Length: 245
Image (cartoon, rainbow, N blue to C red; front, side, top):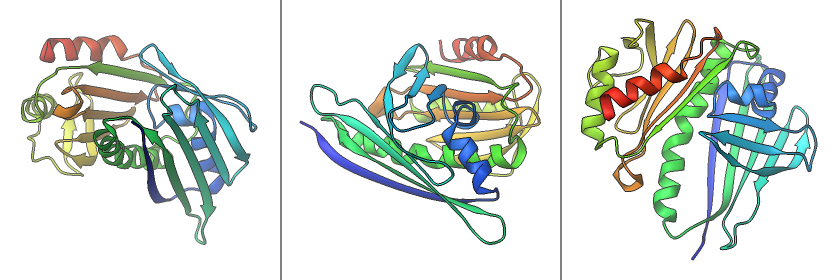
């Protein structure tokens, strides 16, 4: 049985509407703060595909109003499930921009777990967007994306103990704390919502650590962007295999 849902998010960004539009309505822009790799067209009917770890989720642009509105919708599954997204961009006096996100559609039998995962997940991605616009805006040509998925990594307490120890902090970590990545790079926590997710910024990039929760397979998900062009996929896969093998 399918269940309808709607999720609303809003964030005010210290950026122009043009900068925000480039970040949410172009493939390289989305890749700089979201997950995986995105293919986006430039008109209604064009593609809006997300590829992550070998799987492509296909969708179509349903509304394209440059600078103000972008909407997409996935194909409907045989059981009626689908996902639709709408981004609304509004400039404010003083040079800031409000981005509103509306996500709706039909979820499957486990809709409550899926809905809670989306509601818990969006804030870190929107805060990552804020960090991207503040520190790395426009640096898409040298972007390298890392995506690692480790199912059955362990319960949240065990996983976050390993992750935080690897960063040189404790599970009581808060935003603004200094950390050090396994390769020695110094960083600062820009988002802390344990036991769900943690975001770190370094001079080179943005790093996210996400635990899916026990109800979604105790998976550890890494989603990183390196704007210096350093390919870190193999290194983070090795780190994950070493600690959660």
